[in-house]
Amino acid sequence: MTDDVANCPHCGSTSIQAVPIEKKKIGQAMIAEYFMGTAAGVAAGSAMVIQAICLKCGTQWFPGTAQEQRIRALSGQLGPAAQDQERKKIDEEERSKNRASSQLAVTLFVLIAIVVIASMIGGIWSSRKDAATRAFIWRRDSAEAAHRQRTDSFLRARARP
Image 1 (tube, rainbow, N blue to C red):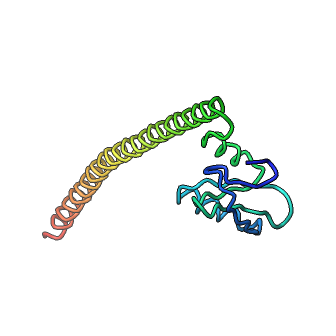
Image 2 (cartoon, rainbow, N blue to C red; image 1 turned 135 degrees about the vertical axis):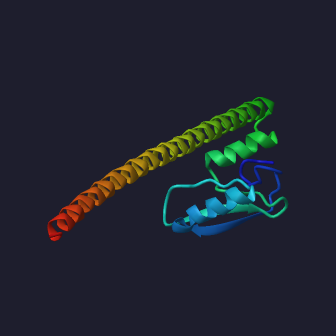
């Protein structure tokens, strides 16, 4: 295949369709493509960008981007050295994602543990406060009852002739 003819970076087919895409929709397209498992890159430029789609294998890419180079390297079109280098980059990216996931899991675990400990401390403090409040009210009520009893006794004593 010559460089003059556009070809698929994945399978090498020349059956390619160019699809114009508005730039504002690229973000939505990228998210959809990410979750659907196909690769798609973002190209800078005018309000419209061209996305190429292979009619043979379905690969989608933005011509002239690093994403296209990556697909070509992985498919072996750029040689075995480039293919090995891309595979190593992908392995490193996966390890990096795994490390980030592990760090996120540890962070979430620590935050949950802090919330649980804080709620336990709050419950203990609240129950002690409640016990102290009940004791205070009991002493206050007992003091008032004793004062009423003394006042009643005093008034009865004065009321007797």
